[in-house]
Image 1 (tube, helix red, strand yellow):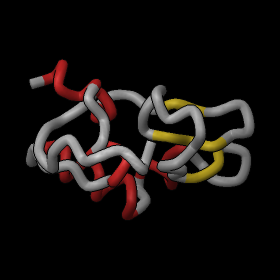
Image 2 (tube, rainbow, N blue to C red):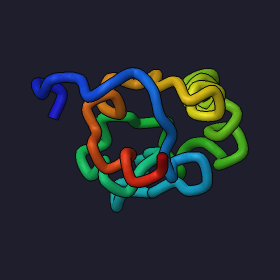
Image 3 (tube, rainbow, N blue to C red):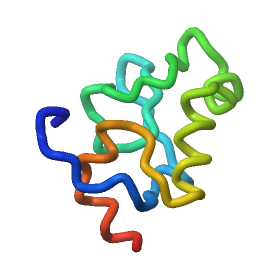
Image 4 (cartoon, rainbow, N blue to C red):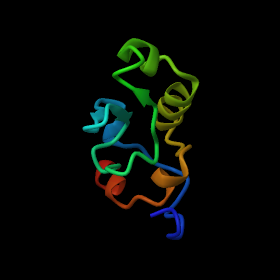
Length: 84
């Protein structure tokens, strides 16, 4: 929930090696994002290659690889603490 307090701006996540595709075709970086808050594109209209090459996705991945959390939803996530 975006109204929650931020957990921290540091960390990483399983989003570095997975994506999820919602039933409406929305591609999200995390299976926990069932509302599509971090919508990266739609698989019905955009190739997966193009979605994974998008500036938003690249910024997220670059951030995770540097242990820096870019997306506000991810900053509030406590699940990522399992991957320390």
